[in-house]
Image (tube, rainbow, N blue to C red; front, side, top):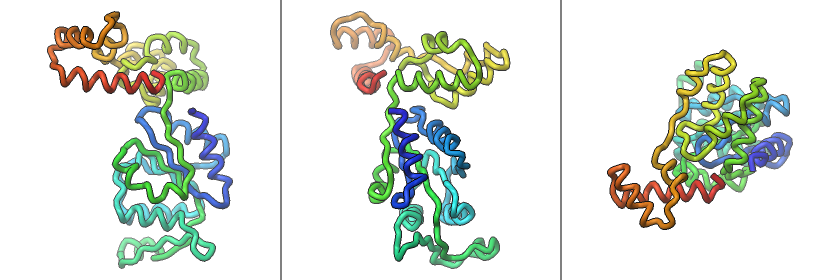
Length: 260
């Protein structure tokens, strides 16, 4: 459920035992948006990292925001060094969470950053990379964990709240036209762009944001009664073979099983 993210984030912010929240799942499922909403409702500023980061850069960033809330958004380059830094931020030893940088660095001395410091803040991590998800497993016991899979209904609910923020009245039309599993580019950042364009009266530019996945639409609207008939129609229409059919069909079925 989409509310699970807000509940986990808010619980973490007020917890004296747990200091991180980890949210993983499909891209475009509203992870970051819900984190932002939870922080806003709590009146807390989040310090976001939304790009590739080196271990030294993460160490410095955590020091600069050592008593704040750091959000590692779409963490996708987790290695052993980054993992060690995160462990230091979460593991309580002798009543403190100590993070250390054990090799000399001109960068640290130039910025007057110590080689060891106590971290008292909170960390929120979002991830849609299953390789990263596997690497972060040793930390999961120290975190609130949410597996975010937004159904069509839940995604629609989030989009409706965005339209209300923009005071737009055409949500039902948008819902009927775009909120389906064959709309390409359907993620919340693009929904926000759409609303910006509509608010500015730029309808044509708004409509160019989204496109149609013709294969998924074919699956969705087809009236045939068997998979073999569907496959033959697929091969004729798209000039693709059996293996391509089953690859697309599996992804389509996975989406349907998740409420789309």
